Amino acid sequence: MTDAEKRMKKYTNGVERRLNLPASVKQRVMSDFISSIQARREAGMTDEEILTELGTPAKAAEELNEQMQEFTYRKSPWRFLFAVGAVYGAVKLISYLVHKILFLFLADPVLRVGEAASIGIIGGADGPTAIFLTTPDWARVVVPVLLVAVGFLGYRRLSRCRRKQ
Amino acid sequence: MLNTKEVIIVEDRFTQQLKKGILEMLVLQLICEKPTYGYELLSRLKEQSQNRFVLKEGTLYPILYRLEDDGMISAQWQQGTGRVAPKKIYEATENGRQENVRRKRIWEEFSETVTGFLTGGDTK
Image 1 (cartoon, chains in turn yellow, green):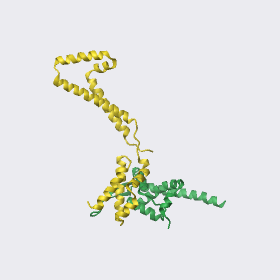
Image 2 (cartoon, chains in turn purple, cyan):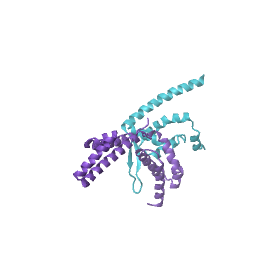
Image 3 (tube, rainbow over the protein chains, first blue to last red):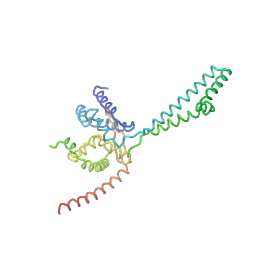
Image 4 (cartoon, rainbow over the protein chains, first blue to last red):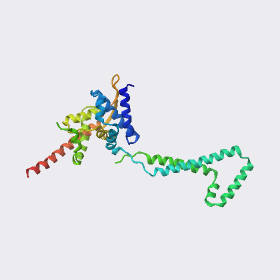
């Protein structure tokens, strides 16, 4: 890469970085923007002239951002709720699996009985926890998995770009 | 000579609104005439309008993307010869050509009607 190319690359990167647009639109804009620079070169303009005409990266990007308004997208703020749900589900699932694995290695039947007994006692002492602790094994896998799945899909769906009409 | 920069700055809301639809029509017309790329469109608009339609890339892109998304034009990468980098070139689709004809007709009707109003106002 020659120095001139490096300089132009730096310039276009600077513009791209400042574009406040969804990735796909950004790519579209940049492909045209770079074509434009190329076309100006072929029309006989020097890089110096091209850069003066297009303005600083900040200015060029600002103009593009402004003009591309209708192609910007809105992400729903509710997506965070789904994200939190997914993370919560993942944490539950991992902690459950870690428990299981630890038991596989460490526990002998006697310990298991002891554990079960203490869960029963503690669980009996406070209501909602008891429900969770006494839920069947399968539910303790399925529920977090569902949470993760729904959370993840919901998050993706709500952050999906939608064109403002 | 007219300073084009100043013309852009003093452009009011009315002119902007008027230009918006017209530019889309003109861009489609220019692309129908021959496949072209962004910068060439800007230069042709500028030259043929005697510096009245001086656009920046940013103003042109939304027009191009709208036309492309509506299937009136399509973009291709044109490989340059030798060390020349490829450029994005736009050409009209069949739909675009038909739409262009339709738009021209609408424009003619419009301008006739509007001119009728305006000249009528003058003679009063």
